[in-house]
Amino acid sequence: MSLKKRNSDLKIGSVVLVINETKSRLLWPMGIVTKLFPGKNGHVRAVELKTNKGLICRAVQKLHRLEFLDETDVPETCGLSDSPEEVGKTDRAKAFSSQEEQMISRRGRTITPREKLDL
Image 1 (cartoon, rainbow, N blue to C red):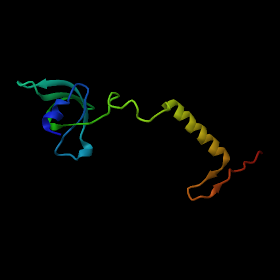
Image 2 (tube, helix red, strand yellow):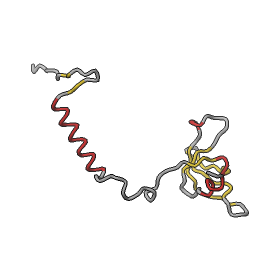
Image 3 (cartoon, helix red, strand yellow):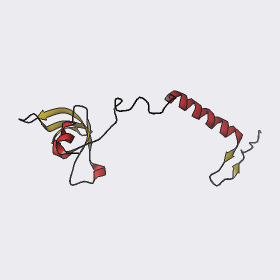
Image 4 (cartoon, one colour):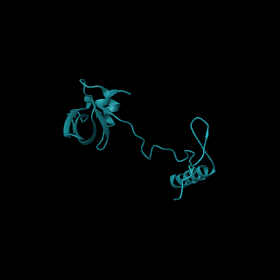
């Protein structure tokens, strides 16, 4: 992806990583674009970001945009027929029924429930 295309994708609300050359990539702060500052030719040159430390201004070259799928990017026929609520209910029902039948340890042994004394 060319630099022009990557920078033109920035818009208000985009999630970005702020590049810091003195720290490893895992420690780069994450921010949300709150304001765009265009140059004389109309291209975005700098942005204002909201991070956990506060508001900062950074050049576009010092940002790495994170890619997220929007709802508009997902095709209508993605192969999912059940809604998430229905899937969650069936998973819970299967989990409860399997617990009642028989419990097996990670090593393959059957687990018998403890018998408590009623004193």
